[in-house]
Image 1 (cartoon, rainbow, N blue to C red):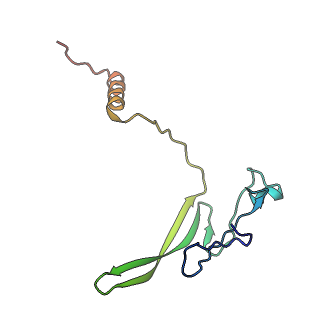
Image 2: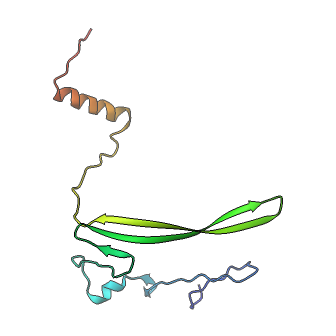
Image 3: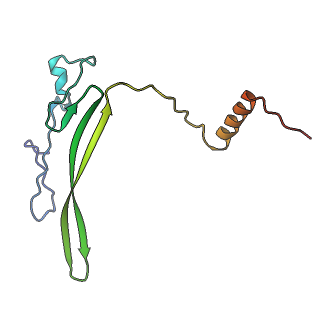
Length: 129
C-alpha cells in the first residue's frame, strides 16, 4: 500500500481512491485511548447531535445511505437510485440479567433430556409391558 493511504486498482480505466485510516505503531493497529491512560472502568459518553441520553435509555439516530441498481438489458441502461434509511437505536442504560444459552440442547437428544427432566420433576409415570 502506498504511504499516502490511497489504493488504485491495477487494471482500472479511471483511478479509484479508497481512503484508509489506520493508526499504527510498528505496523500494529493501536487504540488511541490507550495513549491517554484510559482503563476499562471509564465510562463512555458520545457528544453528538444524533445521540440523546435519558435516565433510562441511550438513543441514537443513524442515516444509512446506499444505492439501488436497476439494469435494463433491452435498453442497455443501468440506473442508479440513491436510497436513505433512517435507523433509531435505543439501548437501556441498566444492565439486564444474564441468561444461559445451552449449546447442543436442541435436536433429538436435547428434547429427550428435556422431556425426562420434566417427567421426573412432575413425577409422571407410564405403563410398561
